Length: 263
Length: 277
Image (cartoon, rainbow over all chains, first blue to last red; front, side, top):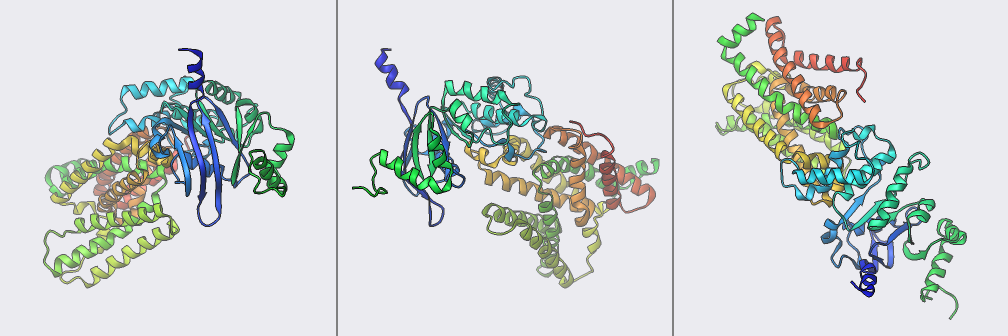
C-alpha cells in the first residue's frame, strides 16, 4: 500500500451529519447540526445539561429519527448501521440486585446472532476475549452486583466490544465513578482510543483532554473545537449567560454571520 | 405420613393433587424467579385477581348457552392473557400511571367475576375454592391442563431464556441488538399470566402471589445467578407443595394456607442467614 492510500483510509468518513434538526414537540432540541466523524477519530461530546447530548446519541443509535436533515453512519441509516455500532450506557442505570454475572452481560453483545436456546461457543469466546480486553478476564463469573462502579462500567464496555463494533458510542462512562480509585477505567478508554472510532459523551473535561482528538460542543447548535480547549471557551460553554456569545462566535468563525451584528 | 402415602395409592384425588403440585412446582419456580428479578410482582397479583372475572364469565356463559367446552380454566386463561396484554400495552405506551392500571384491572376482574357468579343459573358456585384454592378438587383434566400449560411455559423459557434475561436487564440494549424488547416483555407477562392460572388452582387467588414470589425471593438471598435461583426456587416450591399437601392431609387443615405459611416462614428465616455476597 502506498502512503497516499493509507492517508485516505485513515481519513475515511465514518459518520456524516448534515443540517440535522430534531424536535420532540415544538421547540427544537437540535438545530442545523452538521459534523462528520472520521475513521479512528476520538470525538468527545460536551455541553450543558439539556443541551441535546443524549438526543444526539439516541439519533446516532437510531432510537430517534431526525425531524429534518440527514444522518448517515457507514453510508447507511443509523438503524441499518446498528450492527457495527457498540453502545455503552451508564453503569448506574442498572438494577444492582439483578442476578447476573459479568460474562452473561457481555454475551448480550452477541444477541443478534442468537435465534433461540444457548449461546454457541463462538459467542462465549468472543465474550471472554472482550472481558480480557477491558482487563476483567478473571472476573467473568463474578455477579454484577459484586463489582465496583468502574468495573461495572468496564463490563458494559466489554459488552459493546463483543459486538465487534467499528464505532463505539459511550454515554458518560466516568459519571459517578471516582477515577482516582478506578484508574483502570481510564486505561481501558485510552487503550480503545488507539483501536477504534469513538464518540464519547462526557462532563469530565479531564477525560476530554486525555481521550479526545477534538470536541463537539452541543447546545441546540453544534460546534466543533480542537483541543486543548481554552479556559475562555470552557467558561462560555458552561456558563448560561455566555452561551449565546459562544454560539455567535463559533458560527462567525465558520462563516455563518446570521447571528452577528456586523455586515 | 404413612396415612398420606396410603391415601396417595388409594384415592385418585390425592394422586391428582400431588401430581399437579409436582408438575407446577417447575413452572412456578422458573416464572417466579423472572417475576422477582424483573420486579413485576404486583402485575402478577393483578392478573391473579382478574382471573376471577374469566372464571365467572365462563361459568355464566357455559350455563346460559350450554357451552360445555367453556370450562372455568378456559375462562381463566383468557382473562389472564387479556389482563397481561392490557397492562403490558399501557406500560409500553406509558400514557397512564402503571400502578393505577394495575389497581383497576385487579378490582375490575374481581367485580366482574362476582357479578357473573351471582347471576349464573343452576347450583351455587363454590366461590371459596377459587379465592382460597383447593388443590384437592384437582380433576384428571386439571392435571392434564397443568402439564400442557407447564410444558408450554417451560419450552418458551428454554427457547428464549437469554432474550428474556436481556430484556429484563436492559431493554434498550436488547433492542439495539435486534431483540424486540416489547415482544419479549409481553411474552414474559403472558408466561406469568398462565402461571397465575395454575397457581389459583393450588392456593387460590389471594395467596397465589406468595407461592410464586416467596420461593424465588428466598432463593435470591443465596445466589446471584438467575438460573441457580430458578433451581433453588423449583426445589423449595416442590417441598412446599408436596410437604404442604401431606401435612395438611395428615392434620386435616386447608392446603393452600398451609403451603403459603411454610413459604413465608422459610423466607423470614432466610434473613437470619447472612446473605451470600
